[in-house]
Structure formats: structure tokens, C-alpha cells
Image (cartoon, rainbow, N blue to C red; front, side, top):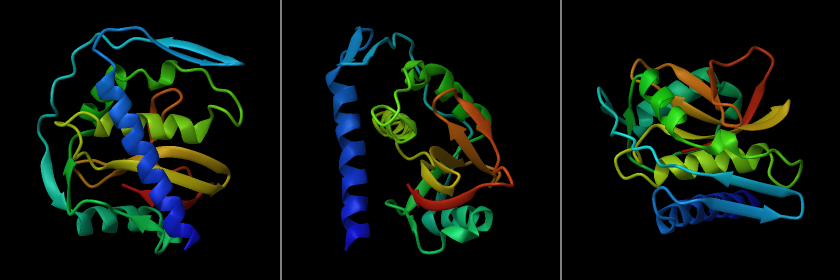
Length: 180
């Protein structure tokens, strides 16, 4: 029951982030305020739709993720029946466009999980990118949260949304949960 409630909360947060994205006009100044956090982020560049992609079933995506992170077991949740797989260069183009990495890290307030949710929400708020095989991944050892995606060749990539680094699984990490 706790898992289902946590999953519902994750989904609601990502939907809320996507809704906010559409309510903010293109090219405006967005200001996020809190006692210790003030960040101004603009997004006045146009992002073209992904090219050279192919659609694959959720079973294929799950197989690729479980092959890379077998310790996740049944803690993988895929919300769609198919996903768009693109070359990793297309995701690099998306990361260059996105401004998530420009926010300020604040422990326990705006930290790794908030960065991963924001990037995931950005991707899902763009209709032509919403089917991308990207999601969120939580690690238990060491404790951390990032984004994950499967490319057109079936390679699994991790994205550190705090700095847009893209890399494959380091040997010293243990995944706990994947949601797409």
C-alpha cells in the first residue's frame, strides 16, 4: 500500500510540474523563491522534435532496464505501452535546451530528487518528446536520484540532471526504483 501511495505521489508531482511548464509563457523570466533559494531560469530557445527515433514496447524497455539493473526486481513501473527510443545525441540536444541544471542545489529543499522530477516533467510537458524512454531512478547505495533513459541501440544511460552529465552505470551503485 505504501508503494502504491508513493507511486501516486510521484506521478502527481510530475504531472504538476508539466502543468506549470505549460502555464509559463515561452521566453519569460521564471522566479523560484524560498528563504534560501532564489533562481532565475529562462528558456527562450526552440527545441525541435526528436529525429531518427523508433517506438518499442514497454516490455523491450523493461528488459533493457532490468538487464542493466537486475537488483530493481519488481520495483520498476512503466506507465505507457510503448516508448520512443532515440540516439543519445538527441537527448544531449534536449539537455542543452533544458534549464534544470541552472537551478541551485539546496540540501533537503531542492536536492537530487527535485532535479530529477523537474527534468522528467520538462520532457513530459513537450508533446513531441513525451513518449521518450526517459524516467527516474533512485539508488539506495549510495542514496541518490537521477534520470534514466534507453537509447535507440538499447543502451541504458543515466543523466545527472544537476549538471547534464550522461553516463552508463558506474560499478559501485545499487538501484532501488525505476519509474517511466
